[in-house]
Length: 290
Image 1 (cartoon, rainbow, N blue to C red):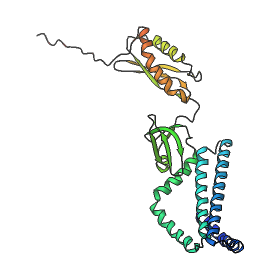
Image 2 (image 1 turned 135 degrees about the vertical axis):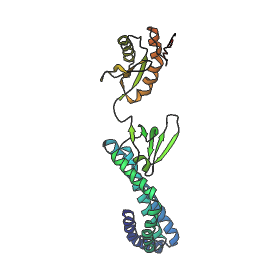
Image 3 (image 1 turned 180 degrees about the horizontal axis):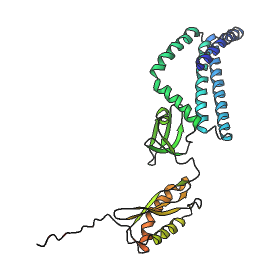
Image 4 (image 1 turned 180 degrees about the vertical axis):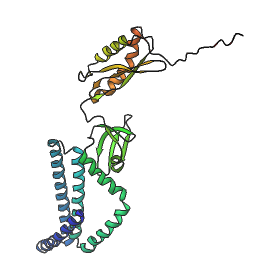
């Protein structure tokens, strides 16, 4: 409706612009078509300038106002640009003497038809607005959206684009994004690792915990607050499971995860310990000797 109202307002100005075209053509004796082309070019240039100014202003505001994110600025910018270009098209049609009354009337009917035909697209548009308002992620954040994981690289009025860990480009429409569970791993200032180390039942668990704690605290990426947790978590069928829960910056998560898993077995073995493998103890009954 706002778009149609804007187009209608532009149509009211077409009559005045058409009179200006006539005055110019009569004064300098140029063909009206040439004058219309010149004015059309000027209108397009003005529209481009206005759209660029609005875009720069919105992104400038997003850098100063934390709640007005880059995603929101980009979404609003594209919606406004679309409205500007629709109005520009209406004005240019007026330059060439196109009667806009049936065009505007047709837009109302066409809008109803397209509303049914483009339900999914409209749903994505409004979902994009909800994403921009609620700000569940930012460009550069690592997120899980449903069963899809990746870094947010861009968002527009229809879709969100992610880059997966194996460098695949993933495009999801906004409706599916907003309708899924969104887990953001980059939004907070620290992230906890949950790792498990298994030792056999003959192991001195206090000594094992001290060795594991010393190893994890040797990493400069580990945050001192909250302090890492290294405690017995479970008594399994073949092992005692020790949970290891340090905190790191989101950007250090995988670096610490892979490093710890690569070094913990070597560290335990160098201290006379080992990780057990699944085993089954079978007791044989000699049976009745009689």
